[in-house]
Amino acid sequence: MAKLLIVEDEPELGSLLQQHLQGEGHTVELERDGRNALESCRFTTFDLIILDLMLPGLDGLEVARRIRQPRVPLNNVSFESAGLEHATSATVPILMLTARAEESDRVLGFEVGADDYIAKPFSLREMLARVRAMLRRSQITKEATAASVEVIRLGRLEIDLAARSVKIGSTVTDLTPREYDLLLMLAHHPGRTFSRDYLLERIWGTSFEGSDRVVDTTVVRLRRKLLEEGERVVSVWGVGYRLDA
Ligand code: CA
Image 1 (cartoon, helix red, strand yellow):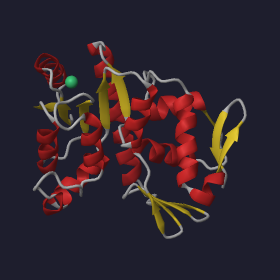
Image 2 (cartoon, helix red, strand yellow; image 1 turned 90 degrees about the vertical axis):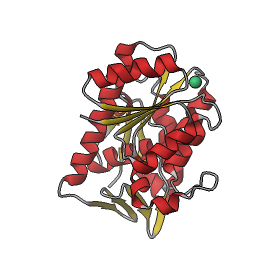
Image 3 (cartoon, protein in one colour; image 1 turned 135 degrees about the vertical axis):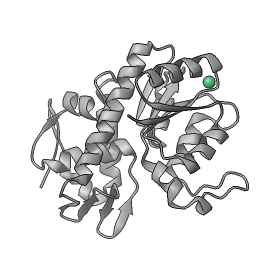
Image 4 (cartoon, helix red, strand yellow; image 1 turned 60 degrees about the vertical axis):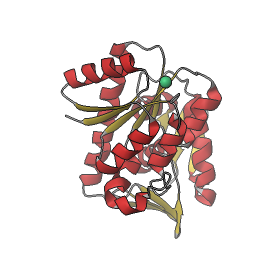
């Protein structure tokens, strides 16, 4: 069972989610604002964070950004003093709650490292299904990391599974969790073509509300970040994508 953090300023919704997730056997912490959430992340390594976009003070995007970049100081509190304890939160899966369905917010959310979205109002059933899918995916990643393969090398591209880091030559490339998962899936089977639907289901989850365009936009960003190695990510017309060995 997992350790979850809910960051939600609507007390009723927060408590409802907390109750139901505790009902699934999880340990669930509830915070009402971004600063307390970040403070919580300094001391606890969560398996999943459910983060409301519209929060008083620091909004959800800013909270996600700071969780992903643990060295941004919060007022006079320096995260550097928290050391590794906090750094481990940098890869925690984030499910963002949003009342705003606009593409720009969704894209911005992905850029700062949210892994999935659910738009308010949502059904509890869908929320619980989404949480289960995200926890399952992160478990798969952990198992892959624990397996014997530690580093995948393709040309100048190097993926370090344990560190979840990617290098082109000696330069570290900063990927969002979804960009990384996509690259990892393709890189596990170079030369194999994956359909958009398959990638969407495995990486974003079946219940992801976005269209398969999110796969395309993620590929575009991934290619750009992989510099000259980006050419390895090949579009297969009418099907999807593959990574050239
Ligand atoms: Ca809110």
